[in-house]
Length: 347
Image (cartoon, rainbow, N blue to C red; front, side, top):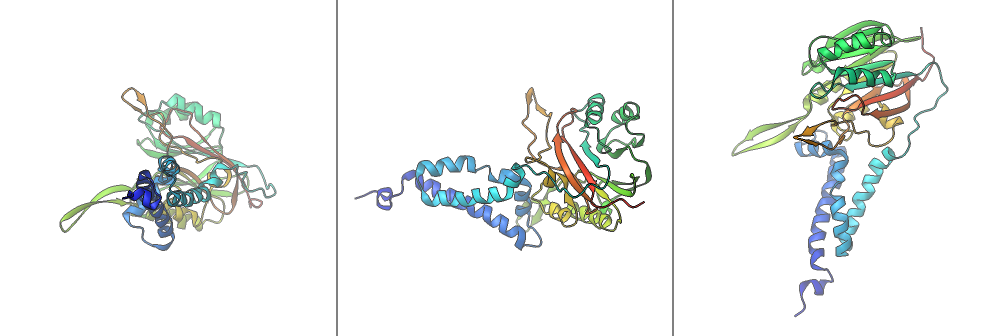
């Protein structure tokens, strides 16, 4: 009696490859479809969104399995996932020169840097900021020793500074005069954000510095079961509040910081609805910024592995170039973007 594998023309390895590849492909395609079809994302969808490009990591193991097994169904399923990966991420892997309208004045270079107080040294941070040469620097997780080092070592480059003494605060270094500042809680919850009005060469710009809490895993009891749930509603609400504030500003607006979200997440969609992501428009690569300079015992941990640090801008500006730099000793890489005005700045 012929064996089952011989009768169907499928090898024993194929019986393993086909269900694994088909189930994986169906899950990825379902996730991408539900992102656009479901208004309120369930916890599993939120979790998949935060995986970012690592959602496609199983391809590294499944593609060889499908090829060795010669299972056409498995290879077709993985080809569909591979095509989706290319559609989503190939633009990140190609050079993105940014928009190129006619120049209307001196470009502005912006930088955001989470200082990583657990691992960094003030001298290294100051040197990295000085070498980057940005005009405006958003600081997250500012701590007293770093604030003192910046006030002394960077005073010549940045005569205008907001360096609060409370550990974990947001700060700002600026070449431009600071006309006004405000500390507020977006949507009335979570960590405080900083807003500053800057006198640019010919206009007033609003700069927001944010560091909201990341999504959290909460235990939500139901009858007979306690189920872990990923909660990101606070992050979405905070960013929606900032977007509303930024949209009402008449001039240039920058929103910078460690936003604790991936570029495939729902909070990212909220930001993208009204703002422009500088790295997505004028950077190159996946833009990973966290974690770096982390150790477990005596071993250095790999990184960076996720993109959670951003520079956003409104329609008054456009991005000429953007990049990530991992100097300075923080557990975050900084993001640097060179921006210009779409129209002559009004006095």
